[in-house]
Length: 509
Image 1 (tube, rainbow, N blue to C red):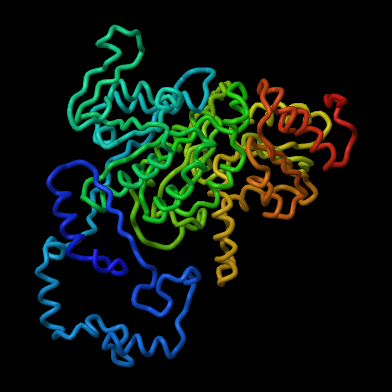
Image 2: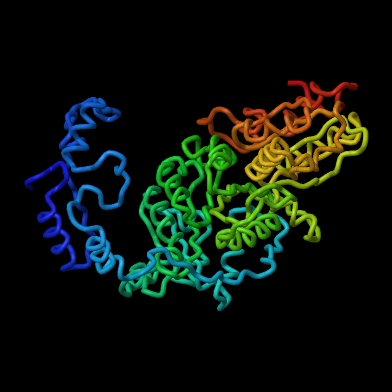
């Protein structure tokens, strides 16, 4: 290697040529002297080093760059611009034309059927919905590619894999079946398979989701990648997830199980901060549904949203730029909940997608509103029932996406600040009829800051309940009581915030 600073091009070209002689993965390690050719070359402090004006002037002259021509395309190269331009147009990379491609949208049905079981977890519902899609010979089913880092079965992808198979460049038989080892799953690999099985490698998961989620742009063929991972281990690959979103990759991330609700699995698997990650990550719309019908609506919306690439002004219903599309994060749970019996009408569906809806609309003299997100729905419902006799017109707000609620609220505020006084977000419309004296109690299996901002929308006194520490183990009831997110904790918070007689169903601690 003759020039480690700018790299020895003949050596690089030779290495590239050797790599093309086979189809195995190749890693190139290029040793570099930082700042090669500059006065600060190789200095340990040069990460943010700047040259002096005199040094910069000498560097400019050494490279034959005329003053005022620093940004000219071919400045300093010593060859006619027309000759260089003609050469660049002939190189194979440029001769292939556009490097960024496009692909037609894959049709998405008007609705996905929600599983009909009376009691179900959102994790199980996800597997059932995907399994039903796998039954059908539709373009949507053909374009879905799933992947998981060693949690395929435990995140309910097994039925989909049984139907659609695992991907490999050449066919591989199921060794367990061959050896007559009993299994409810078929692990046959073939080029037609639609699932990538990874080891315990969450970083690889997001690198793969990024690559699959850019297939329409890179190759002109649209894929709809779905990756499943245990929710706490999203943090293992935060950089890879961030850069996947930065590149505008499109994927559906299903993180499950989540929170301290996975109590039987112990403290090491508990997640707290992931609702905040979902809210803060640009390019990622985060949802935390409680019920199977909410999940079906969200998944249907996600398959459409992942394919949007339009331009336009924000939708004045929510002030979100939904036309641009993006990736979607579902925070699910393995806790089995009793499912509501209801009709999914347009208003309810819109509320789920926009981020919240009234499960029980507050009356005109409401003293307390309970707002919950996700799997703590039974506790919130029970608490509202306990408050009913001692507090007036109690409301119950189901928050399916704190991320979209907050983003819409922020966008509407910016719109008003920029001269659009009529701008109102979805959450502002939901809460505008709630009396100013009404107390607001929020609860979720996650950091309380995820919903604690709701009181700022219209200035309601708020108590945000959630989880701030992890590591304890026990039953779900034990942990909910310990962290103060059970029905009794919700009632205690409501009693403390709102005037009135003591709540009769509140037990002494």
